[in-house]
Image 1 (tube, rainbow, N blue to C red):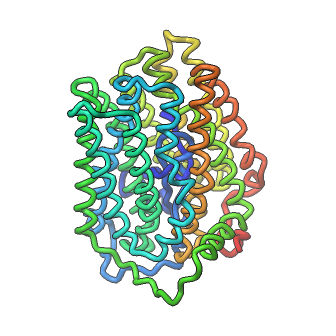
Image 2: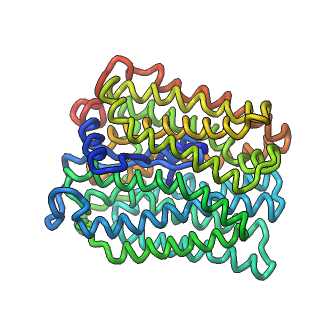
Length: 476
């Protein structure tokens, strides 16, 4: 329903749903990929690597990735885990609001716990990951997430579940997600050839959109028919499937030379200087960060808004999320045509205008309860569409200009900035919701969201058609 630019984000993009669309998307954007997620325009903005400098895996087959068994192994595991993650995104807020009767402030703390890791360990995580095998990091992260989530249904079955348990699990899963996401966004160049990167990211991101389309509706039905903790069990099994798929995947990432390592603070600073040394990236980070901050305020109170204020059921909530996710698929398919028509650079402010306006639909829905359901579906559709257009375009730009050795740090630096504001926004949502009420807080968030696009709308993007390459981008 609400989209996050991060990314993305996050932890957790879009691309085309078929091989033909993947190639068109890659051609329209030179070399593309993007990462994104649902939760505010914050999930959305993150990816990594300089495709031109990537070394092609020696044994990666040429042609379509449909013939690459190694990539298909990774893809199948990620498809299952993306689908399962949708269950938990719905189940944990429902568990807090309807089972544990959480207050506005408690919901704010829960959301903050889930994203606090990006603020606390986001920067050093990038430097650490650049020193490690990224697939190995992802394997351990999946194992930690599965074990942490498995504790919730067990505690519930024994009647021992309390809010602080949700806080701890959200924090642990959030930390594991930081390491998984930064690694995930950097592993593709070690799996496929440079010319296949657009297709690979297209397949991975279209799978995420398909999961967002079907997962919430199925998750809402499971929660309504059984119980929220049972939906969490389904997510645990999908993380186990991802764990197994990663064990069976073979990457071609070269071992890192310990002699090349520098003090961790120096490496962190190098990543930050790379991001903020580029004037266009600075504006993108500004828009993404402000959008994520205010969108997190909306998203934090969204379960209370939908389930208590509007009186919707968990099943209806899931259907709204699923129908809204259709916008992501349409946006992914439409991005190559939009970029070809108006240009890569101008697509960024156009998309920012779109996702800056859509949060107004949320409080308006409360003023028009008879039309609340269709308004919320339209809001989710437009938000998903514009966030996908934004993410695909700006992440492609970042990928094109970032050297491979800085991939982890670039991702972590941007996530620290654009996801690090999210726990602050979540806590503020709890405070504002307690003091002024849920509806008033939704209005505050919607007005703040209008300001997020100013960084790119007032920037030089309108004067350009295509974004510069590495040599002309102004990056240090």
